[in-house]
Length: 475
Image 1 (cartoon, rainbow, N blue to C red):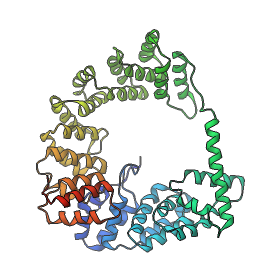
Image 2 (cartoon, rainbow, N blue to C red):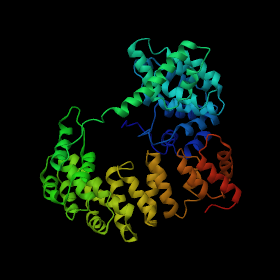
Image 3 (cartoon, rainbow, N blue to C red):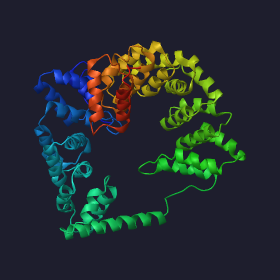
């Protein structure tokens, strides 16, 4: 994934990049020019480690509204010559999403900017999806000719238009354009593309699904290995394991055991997955051997298979492995974090501390360990959880740390829970709506704002309104 340059957590820029609730609070107290510069840097240089699972757009749009920030920087960024050379959703996606929320808040300049970009920008599909849920019918109809004109009247152009209609996340604009009698040429092309989409879908249903393995254990294992020899390589160990569940019988166990111990990479991974799923008596020994094999594909299959287990034998082995410092030890600790009991709290906490010390506040696997110490209500974990809350650049992990602190830290309601009301993640705001103490004068004002905000998620508003109607203190 893209590795952004994140400022220290104690700075205004670092707070805003992380999406922490303290970010807007510090921004509103800072000089307006400094706050706008930090906000613009976040929007134009997406700070998220994984934009598919982390939220920022509503968080930044709210701060733009509070600061009454101009959109000149976003405009220059979107219409930079680089945009016409290569359409890069990572470069423009966050800015377009922020404009979408600002348009929802009634900012006409944001709406007009989205329309301009949808007509001429490189990532026009994203802008069109934002407009599809916020613009009126007249505004959307006015874009039809410009968008459809992107596709030349050639077989390749018509195929590209059909693909755009098929892949559209929001179909509303295309439906309006297909019915637009004021622009008959555009409407005819869109209707033809829509009909082609339906025909292609029908053809796909009749078309064979692709290469399939033969109906025997050796054939399935050979098919799995063939995937690695293809160009580009295809990892088939997981589908092969599912196929083995259908074709393998008791008489095939010796061959599968041999493949799981000595087979080539993909065949070995598929056999390990299958035997683990079938609860073979040798599964745990096979997993241990595969994890130490030095083959990334085989080791990953072994660790993923082990983390799906939760029977008594697997938990006993996990307790023995959790003290290890290799990937198998980490997988064992995550298994105990998800399925272990109170007796496993020491092992999970030790693994959490070890992972933070060796891998930092964004190390792989921290989410399961954080959720585990929270589930086990391990109060000794509060210091490391506070550290993760402050330092991690992942808003998802910070939310997990907040949920764990809600059970592990008696001071959470009067501390981090108040800040969480301004957090970028809806689940974190929902937690804060339930937990934040009413002793802080900022809490009631922010609860009322969230309750009245049309852009706020339904789950958050339900929690906020329940809290306001109860009139009770933070739990």
